[in-house]
Length: 439
Image 1 (cartoon, rainbow, N blue to C red):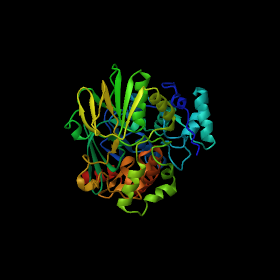
Image 2 (image 1 turned 90 degrees about the vertical axis):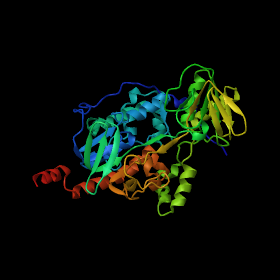
Image 3 (image 1 turned 30 degrees about the vertical axis):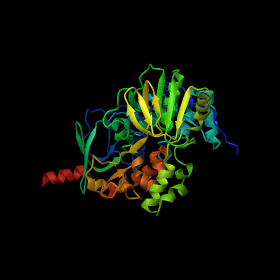
Image 4 (image 1 turned 60 degrees about the horizontal axis):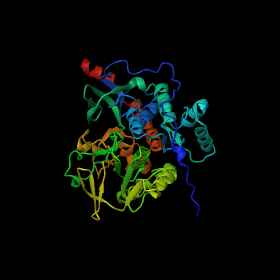
């Protein structure tokens, strides 16, 4: 069997180019949002941007987006830039746009700015037009997200705040942030994923020992030897950065070998027939599918570079060896009794879905092994029907694709339609509030 492996140069694209900005793009005009709205969206990442854009097409304009960073997709791109990532794993057809409407899609946007693109980027667009896999530059994707946020008036409806509580009742939901509260008819949680912490057994819990950090923290410069723990795309970027700095990199992979594939989720799950594999099957079967197909993997483009570095001795890979203990110094103790020493170690142990626990009461989340119980048609919480989930939290209802940008679009289409229909049937919140005041 012949396997085609894309070339590593596809991983490079310019960053920080100037892109046209739509006239009238502006941030929120007030320091705090209104106290009432039809819909509150918690999280303004790619999922929150998709939900807000879809609701705009449904005529739902009374929105408040609350985000810890305060910029649509700001935290997403900060994380990407921290890793030095220049291209996305998602292809051109996967984007935060809205299904079923005549929006400018990501591929259209890139073609409209043809003169800004490099020859390699233009070739990738031709590949996408021909129906082949292609990679998307981070710079293009960020400019497209800004375009979506401006054209759907998302930027001016986004406020910075850290949400502390989401309190659902039978007819409304109150969202309490650090500086303000908003009561809405419906709330959509687009919470994304948080880094997975190391097991307590590695160093007794709490903050990592000196010289150890997680992937979403800056990696200190200096030192000749870097250790990277993890088997996914984030680990590959950290390794690439270390090699580029001239460091000797030690890569600790718990599995017997690393996995290379185009997407982090099998492509079948992005199609209706793949998503249907989750319909009507038991919880145990879904857990098995998630465990089998939601696994760490690396873009094919990294393979030649990492294999060459290993052959040259610049990269030392410790395969099939789990860590048992981490000691200051830095020492990574492996289960076979060996020890990896490094000047610094970075942990890229994956992520866990944020499902609303800690924000909503337990009876609203109905946590089932780290997954919320959702209506599989609308992605509303069965314990809080006015609250919806879009993103990784919807994984056990939608399948492994829920955490990806294209999965966001599928979930968004259902959630936006359900919210718009419910609002048409509901008494407007502000009207209801005034009626109570008159009584």
